[in-house]
Image (cartoon, rainbow over all chains, first blue to last red; front, side, top):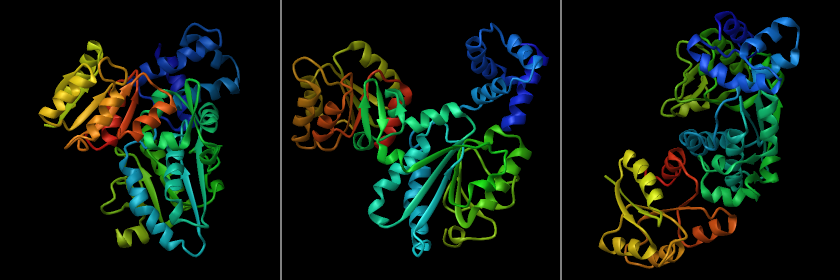
Length: 278
Length: 121
């Protein structure tokens, strides 16, 4: 792949998603976009780049962005954040939100849905502690393709074996031939919506918890700061932001601070329930 | 170092599982059926057992039921690893005392994920 074609494709992806593709990621570009080029009857990425230059094919631009932003996910990824949510964050929120009995949770960049469904199963398991509570889980992604898969809630044998405890498979899944489908009661707990993290996030409303794990690592410094700043505006001052193990707000956004003792959890720098008691 | 008993009548499966688990720092024991596995356990209970279902002499489910009724037999963490991939078999295994269940084919990622879930990694 020549340098001009790489520049053209990487700039398109950056402008539309914030995803930074450096020269050493050329293999990723090729592995994701060659299948797309072939689907469209082209042989090489040069043909794909030329097609982009030729006209204003909005659908092609969208498909390229989607192909590049689809990332791996699995149920209860890393385990620990879900333990923290269940054992510390959720009990504190149940205590402080006891009068209104509502919770709003956002899974940003949810990919094929394993993370929001993990949160939904966890909440279902904790349902006895939350009688009369109204919980909304919003799960967003930039890619229509992954959102469609997420909504269907259909997973391969391989996918249900990575991170999902067998007891939860028995309890919340049904076997559909070679695939496994998550129960409609869990699917109904999650609302999926297409959202670009570079857009105005205020339209999503306010949240008590935001999961944005293993997303910011793909952005440059400036984009990380902008996204975090927007998230700060829509997260309750005593709410919790979950980032991935390799991510931090430090040196990027002063609006948040780490919560002492809770790895990967951040809260408003202005103080808040978690900071005060953590 | 934690010990893991790999029970499978396929030499190839035992070899693949051994490679993965040795890499995860387990001390490996092997048996090719439930009876052989029971002999190993009576000599000394392993920390973890990776257990096939269909085997000659004594199948995995019968082995597990016997193990759980044996002195010290409730201690090992048992992870089934089998081609039996339907809900009925999974339920039966869990009822008999299995801690986790792997549907073959498996790879390192699945073994690591399942062993982490049951707290042996």
